[in-house]
Length: 79
Image (cartoon, rainbow, N blue to C red; front, side, top):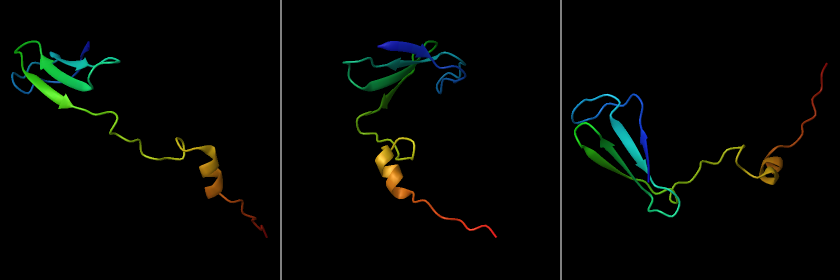
């Protein structure tokens, strides 16, 4: 697991600033994140299932064929 400090966050238990770190799972590990405070030992589990999350469909992440079907050229008459 990678351990990274979260800048600007305050511990919900002791109120210490910049003392909370995030444990991030690496490849092959269980997809589970934990936050803890290095000052008081407070721990919080963040159940996060990346496989269950889906990205919202936008024109940027859709295939080009789907975007091309949606738009039709229009003829404009200028007087």
